[in-house]
Length: 219
Image (cartoon, rainbow, N blue to C red; front, side, top):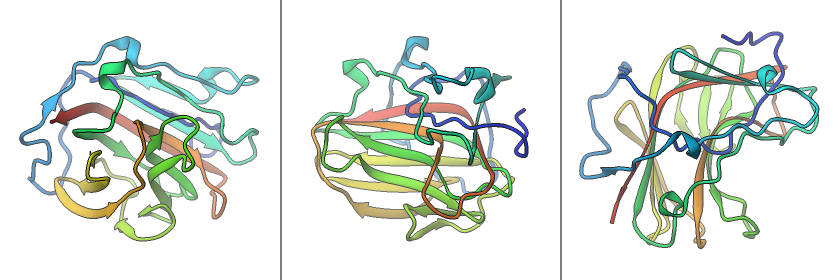
């Protein structure tokens, strides 16, 4: 597992791949995926895009079903990314309801970083419709409303539901509804997660870990 104190960084733009095995997180027993259909995803739906001058192995690790991403505040450029180009049938379009589910872990000390996003189509006026940032142990909607007050050092189940037609998003942590809002409409979207350094209150190193990432939809 990556060291939070000595490793550079990685930003994962999209992981649309169903990881095998089962995983249990403490917390609520709700099931936000009820009524949704699981999207079949192949290994080709996931690829790593690392900084041009730093080996991928210094920013990303996949071991025992867990994907670990870390960023060093002094690395440049700060927005180099891991990226997946989804197939047309799994790219978010202008209708339907789509849902990201993943089990995440944010080590204590990580701050000033986005760990999950919904990104607009390339070239859109607004690059994202949702970002979940971590600041001093609090998971927030961008730098604003608190979504989960105590996110450090525990596995949590994150579900992010996006109703494309209604232009709304809802966030669930450990099966409990935590946040909802209206978002800016666009033609297409994609999910992204990992670590992406923000512009204030950054820790010297930032890290997140993810497993059992799945995509769901209903129309």
